Length: 177
Image (cartoon, rainbow, N blue to C red; front, side):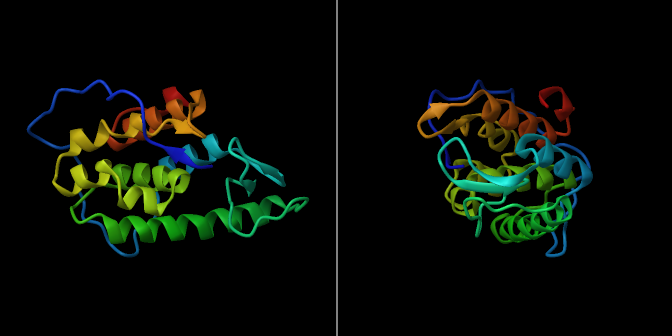
């Protein structure tokens, strides 16, 4: 799905002098935690037969788009394998793009975001620029801006961005699922 940023600025959250706890450095072998995988699976859903998403991109499994053909069918085990491959690709993108220490929930939220919008969108985003300037709350407030696909605000993307933002800030993201 092609997701774009537009619309009004998100309502700011008061900035605090400290960042969320559990601040651990990124590592090249870092993997998405269980909360991040749960968030991704919840929003992507599982589809064992190829379909076109909201903007016409052929998709299968848990949101896999690479190499998907019309009429293609896969098993649940194949969907899990595709998810693992996709996660690895986006985890690597986060490890390369983020230049500051982040905790596991922040990493997982960024993987979910990048899984949905793509690594190129992340790399050019204000969210990443703010994060790399150590503006944690400014970065968090960028998530809600990415709630459009095909030029339209989508309720599912709004919920997903709110869930990612909550996870990023160490809050309960499950209320948005």
